Structure formats: C-alpha cells, structure tokens
Image 1: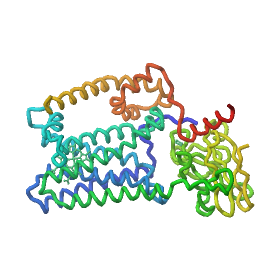
Image 2: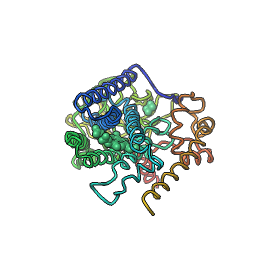
Image 3: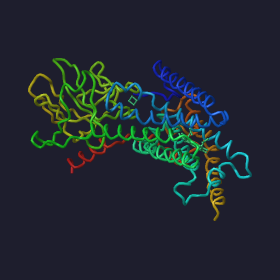
Image 4: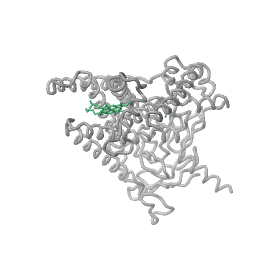
Length: 356
Length: 92
Ligand code: HEM
Ligand code: FES
C-alpha cells in the first residue's frame, strides 16, 4: 500500500478536534486575562497575556501527557489520541508566545542580545533557589519546538521509529524543566499566588499516578510455567471486545490480542501492535471484513498471519495463542513477520498455537 | 569566562547552526526530500512547508541521507528484532 504525504490529514472528526482546541485556548486566555484584570489591577495586559500563554501551555501539556495513560486504561478516551499531535503543536505555539513575549518584555530593551540576556541576566547558576528559571524555560521551549517540528509522519518514517520514539520521550524532560521553571519563577517572586504552586503539585501528582497505574495494568504477567511453553495468561476471553483488541506489553513492545468474528464462530489472534506503515497502533483499530484495520491510515492485516491481503505485501510479527478455561494464553516469543499462527477458536476446548 | 561571555558563545554557535539549516532547508524540501523518501516525491507545497522547520533544525541528518542517496530506513521495532534473532538462532 502507499500513501502520499499530506501537510495535515484532516477529516471531519479531526477538524472538530482542532476547532475544540482553538476554542478552548481562546476561552482560557479570555478568562485568564479577564479575571486578572478584575482582581489584580496593577498587572498590565501584557503581563497577564504572558502569564496566560504560559499557564495555557502548561495546562495543555498536562492534557497531552494524560492522554496516553488514559487511553491505555480505558478505550473510551481513544478519540483524544487521534489528534494528540495537534495538541502538542498547539502547546508549543502557546509556549512560544509566552517565551517570545517574555523575552521582548524583559530582555528586549537592554544592550545585550535578548537571548544572551535570557541566559545571563541572572547568573546564579550555582544556586538552587535563585537558579535562573528563564534559562530552564528556554531549554524546554527548544525541546517543545523539536517535538512539534518532527510531529509529521515523514519524521517517524525517516528518523525510524526507535529514534523518533526516543526523541518524543524527551517531552518528559521538557515537563521536568517546565515544572522547575514555574516553581522557581514563583519562588523568586514572592508576591505570586501560592495557588499556582498547589495546582502544579496536583498536576504533577495526577500525571505521575496515571502513568504508574497504566504501567501497572499493562505489565506482562509472569509466564505461567504450568500452562506449557511459557505462555502468558493475559486476560479472560470476555475482556476483549468483539472485533477489537486489548493491548499488552510482551517482549518489550505492545501486542494486540484481537477477538473477532469469522466463519464458524469467534476467534482470537495476537499480532504485534505496530503497523508497518507508520507505526500506527493496530490494537486501537477494528477488524473490518476479516482484517485488522489500522486506525491511522487504514492499512489492513489478516489476524491469522499478519499479512496484508494481496496485492499488498506488508507483514507484521504474529504471536501464538491458546484459550484454556476462558483465559487467553499468549506465547511471548514473536513469530517472524507474516508467519501463520493458528487463531484460537472459541467454543471448542482450545486452539492449537504453534506457527505452521 | 564570565557568564555573559559563555552565553554569547552558546548563542553564537546556535545562530550559526540554525542559519546553515535555514539555508539548506529550502533546497532539501524542494529536491532532496523526494530523493530520500518516495512518498514525498509529488507531495504538495503544504507538506514541504510543514517539514521545513524540522529540516532547518535536523539538517545534518538529512544532508547525510541525501548525499548517501538512501531510501527511508526499513521498519524496526522490538518485536521485529526479537523475531529476527529467533529466526537466526533456528537456522544456526
Ligand atoms: C524562552 C523561554 C521562556 C521564558 C523567557 C520564560 C519567561 C517567564 C517569565 C519571565 C515568567 C514570570 C512571569 C511573571 O511572573 O510575570 C514565566 C512564568 C511562567 N512560565 Fe515561562 N518562560 C519561558 C518558557 C516557558 C515554557 C516553555 C513554559 C511551558 C509550557 C512556560 C510556562 C510558564 C508558566 C506556567 C509560568 C507561570 C505563569 C503565571 O505566573 O501564571 N514558560 N516565564
Ligand atoms: S500507520 Fe499508517 S496505516 Fe497504520
């Protein structure tokens, strides 16, 4: 299969998503500045806007970081994931407005180059509490830029998935830098409300616990030796929605375990969760016309052998599965891409599971 | 070295790096991108514009790939690597 790159893959839902983001940003900024003007008359509009952009970026970043674990915990959050990149780009643009206007306002009028001034106007690099928080913000902004600039699928294909994924994990470094930026910023300006520090703590605790819970739920259960050749008991048959999958972490990557309708009854089959096209999450797709259909651009794979139907030639690794007493057992050793692994047939005692 | 001096050096190096990237990027999105990735060969203006900032930032990677005339790297992930090493063991 092939698909030309497009600038933005928009459809009705994604347009709605983007309109919602834009409306949310406008409402947030309006409320932030409005409330600021009403309650704190000494702050200028410029200052309020700078703070509003920063706070908006921080809030969006929390949303971006929460979406991943939320979707892993409950598939009803999945619609939020489809356009998460646009949320990320929007986070960067807000942060850019915040950083840009800050630099203009606080560093644009001196004799120094404004960027030099951001880095050097507060030289307390050896102090913890007086550390120049603007430099941390600048570094975070550079990271957010790199992530936004490489969010197009072109980068995923051309940097390769492992490199692209590692690059995008750096968002957690940016998050840490921003937490320090905001915490130090308010520490060094004692008139700033403590509400901000409290909100920051709540936000961090929320993000951290979501990740811990989602990771805990997805951890690979220890191989059950009694079940024979190190098959892993992943879940009950009824845990998998019909014509959909549940995702588990096995062999260092996600595995999508599908339950689907086929001739003669329901079956269960497991494949690597990673689409060959551009690494789309297959386990978040559906089985359509007997084929696993990628939610991103619609590439299809047969559940039993991980091959795209002819004339296409894509293949993904498969996993051998069995069903015993209504439990789904997956052999955690991936079969080479395109290997037939007999699906487990439901209703009968068990399905044979060896690659043939 | 004073902090101001150090900051000036950092900013100067970054400026030079980005200036080179900005000079390279238009040529790459016009000609180079189709060479290293067939799916970009007849892509539209919007696509070329949207990858431009990233090209300006990551230009050494792309310049190397363009000079080497390489195709997009083939897909790699933990499952493919594990399956390949299993197949290797089986045939050895
Ligand atoms: C070039 C980069 C940056 C510079 C120079 C910068 C500068 C500043 C300054 C001067 C303040 C204090 C504003 C005030 O109290 O009036 C501030 C606060 C803040 N910054 Fe940044 N910043 C940068 C990047 C970022 C980034 C990337 C984020 C995050 C997404 C961010 C989020 C915030 C937040 C949430 C506040 C607190 C806003 C408030 O008090 O309500 N900043 N920043
Ligand atoms: S990632 Fe494009 S179809 Fe799966």
